[in-house]
Image 1 (cartoon, helix red, strand yellow):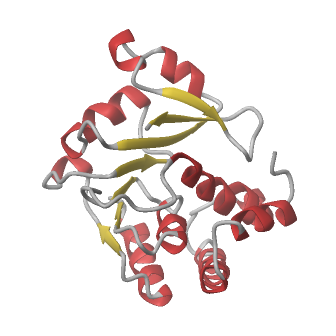
Image 2: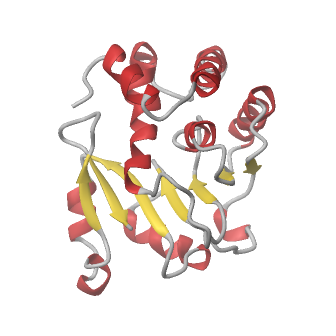
Length: 207
């Protein structure tokens, strides 16, 4: 279990080269500065940004292949990216994966686009729209940290999903409950993984 900022940094270093770590440091600086202007993350979590936000995002990579398959269809689609978690972190740690960040709130879209530009993330694109208004495209991975209740999330994201699409959905302490609420035929397609950053939290996965 990742319980400290030092442990969180060490964990993320396992996924990152020095260039990625530098970008993550820069992103953390950008985020903390912007958090003084708009509420992107809670004030108490600012002191634990590596554990609560960066490592919490990076752990999703445990549930996708390290090497990008040759037959990968579509990008990693992050729904309701908000402050950039997990989408910006994924784009930094996996520059080989095209990443699409979906966020409908204008001020957050502006922050995300600024961050992408400042970090030079050529693999990352920001879409400032509600999901219902976006023309569907096939996605290799779909993630969402705080987008919608699970059943609604799956319904809204269905046009962007194929039989091969991986879902990695950090759902906090409601993960098992939301998973159990799915219809049995849907529930069997998913399972709950233990979060590495919170011993009471889970990640709903379809891989």
